[in-house]
Image (tube, rainbow, N blue to C red; front, side, top):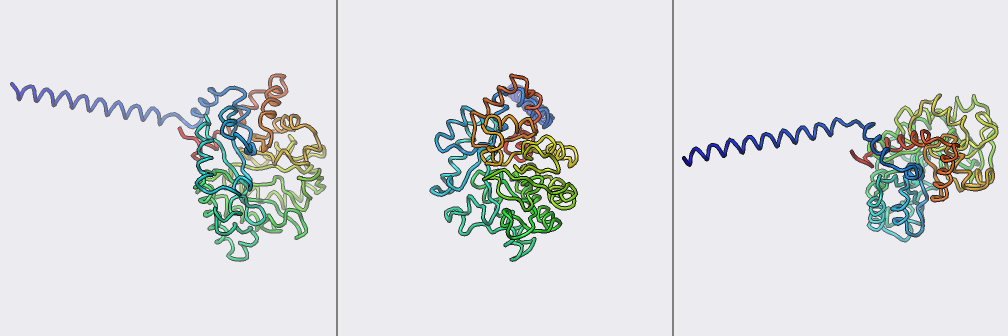
Length: 372
């Protein structure tokens, strides 16, 4: 009799085990069948209009209460500058970023401008790296494209260890002479060589799962500094097609996830508005160049747009109407409120907002910033 009950128990447990295992497999399989687009739509459905708009803002990290403000407003990203690293260290920065991500319903893009050379935010300080990252021009002289590739890998790893998942680099501009404002930040005065530089850096950043950003579309050339004033670029469209656009075309082929648009008024595209505020420029990037990643503005606190339009509220609304997916801005709450009101007034459709948020979520999912 004991043997009989023992056999019944063994059979029963076997059936339970098989059922449990099968059920678990079915559950996992069902979950795996949810496509990326279905998952993105589910996230979009859960967001309020203000949360969608906030997702479009890449805000200069607040000097105070950054974690508290992120918990309240749910911005799409924070941008850090040198001052954020100057009196800090790797552990403190990692902890701080971790805190921001913890209170985010949708994990943030955490970015810096770590170009190398004259623009470094992290490696400028010895507690983060023994020496600052060298400029692209310097790297080319020392070791050509091989060294550039190694540098891109090292830089990406350094940022990722800190919790920084986005680099507003590489610079894809092609200058003319050493007197040009952008010269020290560029790779070469030769468009084809610059395109090869982009082809070296972008795939490596993608491999390391760091969101790269080509800048400053449609090409800065020999123009002056839009941080200080309004700049008008009078070059012909054929010049852009044969020169400035080549590195951007290469970056798009290599799958760059984000492109930054400059504040120059580029007559070849639009004689009235800065590129960052121009529907024509954005249409060209979308339709002619077939880019469907994130389009982000250059900094919206710069004189090139502030002197043109005045209030940051108007600048924010114009940036969205032009076609930008993200606004690189020092103005968080006021930008959200201005865009929100524009949607309520019928100036901007919620469909337009949704299109940008989808692009942002796709990039975040692809680069492991958010997970299904």
